[in-house]
Length: 458
Image (cartoon, rainbow, N blue to C red; front, side, top):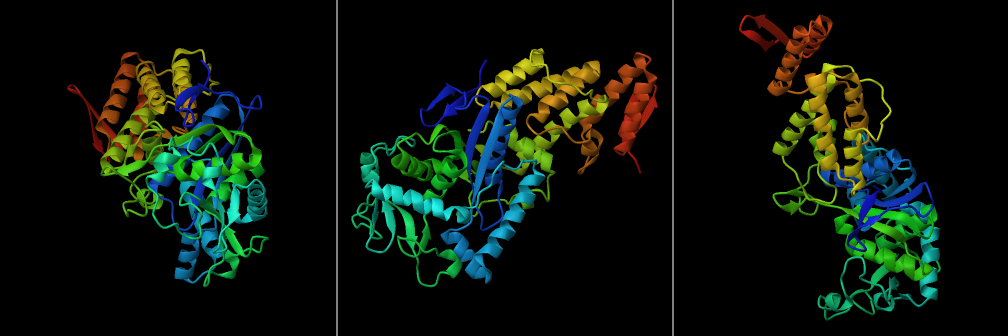
């Protein structure tokens, strides 16, 4: 079975093959970097971390580009509030972002362009659009995109111009010829710091948000590439506007596959800074270990809504303990994945169907059950190797099981049962290993005629 990906543009699952055989080029809209990242941001970056991991596991070379927006109204405002330069703010927040997402095992992209490094490319693209009659200079000094002059506008979001017209205001704002038009170049405003301005043939100013990604993706991956990703909230207007800009300038498709992850929700509302219902990655990691947070996110399909709560994280922790318990029973062998092995084949089939992590993780639990029964080092090795495709189960099992408050009764009983089976099979070395492993977790076993019980070491 070949890899199929849900393409937002066609609203269908499509067979995937890259433009260049063996090489996938993927661009994902990254962070506007003025504050700490929250769990909603982690969900987006985790979704595409899994995508690029699976592409690599499938034998592809991947050029993964995730940009940083380091010039924006919010960034300027925050820097002024704090009395520091824009560069000081963005450098500080980029370091914090790398620390937080690194803790979650999110691998760095191949390229991480900053918007301020690509202003010349943005100006060149705006010039192309003006030359084709798709951009105009407004009376207030801005340069705007003329939406109605691009025939394909609305094809990604499914919004027609008629639908968009229904939301038009009577007054046309900000020097626009049409309310649907959006800004490509913002003229400098009084009170903005010098570092927020660039000189150009369009006057002193700075780029609009949408033009940044069009310029950076083209400069790093070419005029057409394989996958463009981001959160579902970017589908309109950001990605719609990217298509209008890039395809309006080049006449070529920007991306063949458009991939969007679902929201994180709290009390049935999208988690966002504007609503004030967000939890920073840093705050969550004060209460939960990083792998539990990763497992919580990865076990949901990337396109589904993800409901955030302590109860869901607690459940994720207990589920992850079950998997690590299996690996604690027997030292995993070093194995190369044989994709024809039944468990591996099921795992691959799940991931090849639009990165189906829920079904793939179900395979991991089935494998864990087999390891508990057989204590096979090869099956334990396969469990660890398959989980590695998702960035899971690469830590020390004993350390994971010992960490955190309290004890997992089910996990302990599973190890007690495995020890009993080892003793019945006269494998006393294995029985001793399990006893010692439990002792390392602070758990003392008490054998009696009635059976084996446990208690916490004093």
